[in-house]
Every structure is written in structure tokens, then in C-alpha cells.
Image 1 (cartoon, helix red, strand yellow):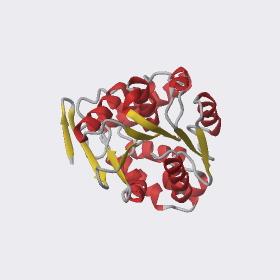
Image 2 (spheres, rainbow, N blue to C red):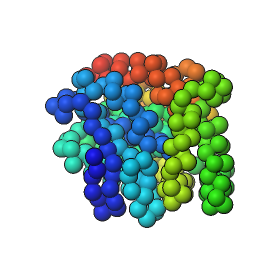
Image 3 (cartoon, helix red, strand yellow):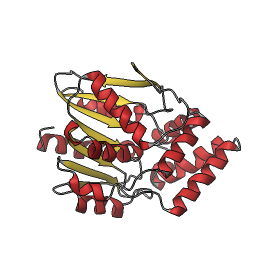
Image 4 (tube, one colour):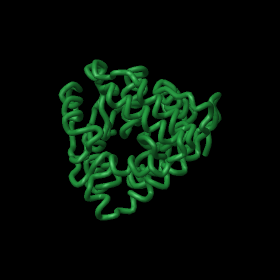
Amino acid sequence: MFLETGSGRIAFETHGDKKEKSILFIHGFPFDRSIWDKQAALLSGDHFAVTFDMRGHGGSDAGSGQYLVEFYVDDVIAIMDHLGLERTCLCGLSMGGYTAMRAIDREPNRFSGLILCDTKSAPDTNETKLNRANLIKTILAGNKSQFADGQVKALFAPKSIENKIPAVERIRAIIESTSDTALIGTLIALSARMDMTESLTRISVPTLIIVGKQDRIATLTDAGEMHAAIKGSRMAVVHEAGHLSNLENSSEFNAALLKFLSTNNL
């Protein structure tokens, strides 16, 4: 399904009965909505689960390639309005987590719960910004395969790569199929994102923080700092997983997800 917006079409899917409690999933960079397939299928029996492709990813239009996290939040709200969701639980991974934090700070009354996966509230350091600039140069030089290789090595826990889990090649294929315009536009948006650390103290809905034990991008330390800042939050560590904990150890991730939703009647 597609939602037409002023910035182009947004591809999305719904799973389950709209009469049930809803949850909206936001993927990370540079992925697409399919990373949530197992979670959406798991919840479809008693939830209305929504997944979508962020601008330039999957089936969504790349548009101008001029992106900001604020625009991603616009898309989240547009999808909710289109589906008639007054409130929903929000689950975001990595870039999706940045978007979720900004969304709940901007529109706190629209969300009933929050799940932050392998993400952090702090903005890019200067070192990270320079690294993103070098990644853009790599893409501009026509070396997308090199970019994809580097991303895979950074995203997954070493054992996930050694064991050749299907998700590794799946993510590589998604990256290589994403347009240069979208990759570059998103890298710039990530570099420009806000520091959301101070806003964490304003979050009042039930919150779960999930982190892969071997995540080198959004670390255990990052997750612990968010957990300490968000009053009443819960934290789950997923073993044998890096930055894509929902794919690398879906059974442990899903158990934490189900427990949180059940405990908080979400």
C-alpha cells in the first residue's frame, strides 16, 4: 500500500485487525520495513502492526534526497492520520529510534508506549560526522559495494557474520538496492540530527530499551544512559547480537517485546 504525500509516496503494510491495539515500527539505516517481518507476524494475532519504508528506502520514493529527522517524524504522523490511529505504541531501531524519540517529544499525546532498539539519544560526534562524510565520498565515487561491505561489518556481531546467518546477505542486498540519492540524503540527515538526551526526562509512557550485547554503534553504555534518564523504563539486553538485534536473535528480542507489551497492556 502507498500513502501519497507532498514529498512522494510512502510504502507501508498493515498486519492484523485495526480494532486491536496498535504498534508502529520504524526501521533503521539503510534498511527497509522488511526487517520487522517477524515481529509484525508475531503480533498480528492480537495487534494492529504497521510497518513502512522511510523516505528513499524500500518502496518509498526518494524524492529530492533532502532529508531531516524532522521530515521522518512528519511521515510517521501522516501514516497514523491516514490509518486513523489517534495513539499508538512506537518501536524504532537505530535511525528509527532517533525518529521515535523526536516524535514522542513533538507529539507526546499521540503515543501510548515507546520501544527504543539499538539506538541512542546523543547526536553525532565530530568524528562520526567525518566518517559519514567519507561514506558519502565512497558512494559518490561509485563504490556502493564497498559501502555495503563496511556497513555489514559494523552492523552485525562477528558471530552473525561467521555463521552466515541469512540476515547478513539480506541486509547487504537491501543496501545495494537503495539509491545513491537516498543513501547520501540519509547520511546527511543523521549527521544533522538533534541531541535528544534532555528530552528523555519528559517521556512519561511505558518505555522499553532493547540493545544487542555486541552492538558497537549504539552500545550497552548508550542504552544504559537512556534507561537511567527515562523514568520507569525497562531495559533488555539481547545476547549474540549486534546492531540488528531483532534479526540476529529474534527469539530473545521477541520475548522481550512480548513481555513489555503484555505487562503494560499495550
